[in-house]
Length: 285
Image 1 (cartoon, rainbow, N blue to C red):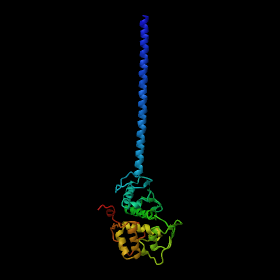
Image 2: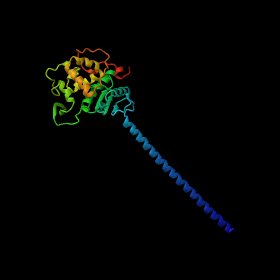
Image 3: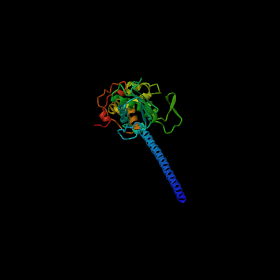
Image 4: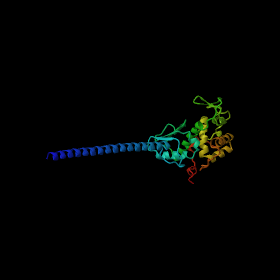
């Protein structure tokens, strides 16, 4: 009996040890599997975060544009302005890519601003209310004229000589290509050439200063190329401005979006309010 009891005790001890080993092995496996799952989840989260970041970086508006290109700027809004965003993206896809590269941010607002738009130094502020599609495009193109003037027509090399023109008290280098345009009708940033008349400008607003002259001429060239060419036939200064845009800004590309006859003997206050063909502009005909 004693030997049998010892055998039972020994068997019980062995069984207990075996059970403990099984429990330990099971816990170790569960712990390892848990650690693996946590690491896999962490890797998955990291990948998803990276993918999301890449999407935001490549296309901050999350909207495909007409040309299917990735636009190099970000659009910010103060509300649900998707229609306005679509118009902006589609319009900018029509312009030369080199012009758009100077643009970093666009701020759209659903509120009326003191002015319909502001543009320069890589940024455009644009109101999306109280304007129809044509006027909205006109204002955007005008502001892109400022962006192109400041960020595209810059000298590759500067010899140190400055012009008579200044930008916020900063002298503009004589090598800046924009100076050639300004000098057609202007002596400096605020003074017109002696003998300059309103017919030397595409609009009355273009007579404000050389910079608005450039932006209005840019707008007229893109949206009303046909009428601009007719105006240039009767005015040497306008012919010079048209050729400057054609040769130095658009490198031979010309536009014909006019849909209505314009009296070439008159000048509207600003070119952004002139009607044009949306179908021609967006190549929808």
